[in-house]
Length: 432
Ligand code: PMP
Picture 1: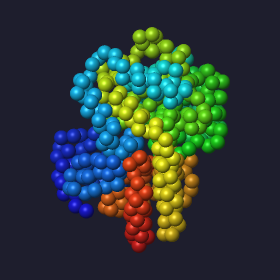
Picture 2: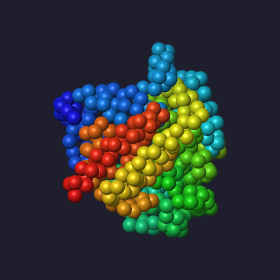
Picture 3: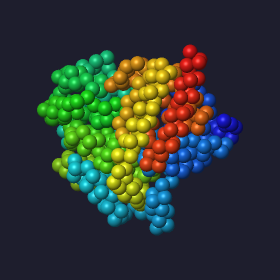
Picture 4: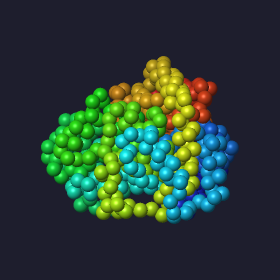
């Protein structure tokens, strides 16, 4: 494949944009470098780059594009919205309709507020939990990404009795000391953290199904135990459903798993591809937010007409019968096909999949926590990534990012993808 135009544009990008990208995950640093492909157009399950190459896309913009690129119903809603003015700074009925749809889909949402990104949504839930409990500390799980606010860019201390350290330059040490990080799926360490800091903990921040070191499901009973222990100590449970909401079923992972948080943060899928975030939860907790309460949160762009109408249109599409069954069916064909190829070519790899989201890890062991995901073979993934890209399959350039199937992928797309996987594995076997 020829990437000449991508390379030229990326050279200009390097001059004009810091690092050539507007989000670090888009760089190819983690897969051995090179100019990231510059996309020109998306349509359904496909991307077309600036050199005219076509790709089957499994990045789905890191999750939001669940109905494929430029879905006609959503595009039409955005066009209509734009014609009536893109930003008002006043209430609109669309905000109400969308909030009602979210409340109907997710029973734990007694009240909702819209913001502009997942980062903002999570950041605000933490502030609200602190205001409600009058405590400062937060527990989070290792390897889970919750946006780029100071409080969640914190690395684990050496154990559950240790406070965190900054995971990014510029995060104050004093802020990192408000965070305790424990391994996902390890209830004993979670208990120990509460044993040490119980009466100081405002909230537990948890991705109910992890999407940020691949797709990792909670072990049986884990989330219920998290809820029980947190509540026993007077702490709130905050679900970060920025990736999971509406990805695995119509509603949240909380419905799928049958566990109810006190607060939830949303983003990604709910905006139909437009910038969005939302948070909400128990009425008595949400009442602490301005203008009703003393906890401040605001936004010039919050609840903007475009994101609201794109979000409503998106929910209308995915509410239809059979959407999630089909994502699961295609996901299973992809998973089964890849497992057969892993066996046939004797590749050291395993797969985690839930419905239409899947991760291939280059390792022998089943991945249930971040440490295992970190220890997978990055070089093998880098080879695989480039081999797939060169056959027109667009994946995230990270060894543990999810592949997302959209409602626009067909069985033929999956079969083509499996052919590309077979070619990639063949090349990797020959190289060994
Ligand atoms: N939480 C989770 C679980 C996420 O995956 C992300 C984004 N990858 C965020 C929060 C931050 O969302 P945003 O990029 O919209 O700020």
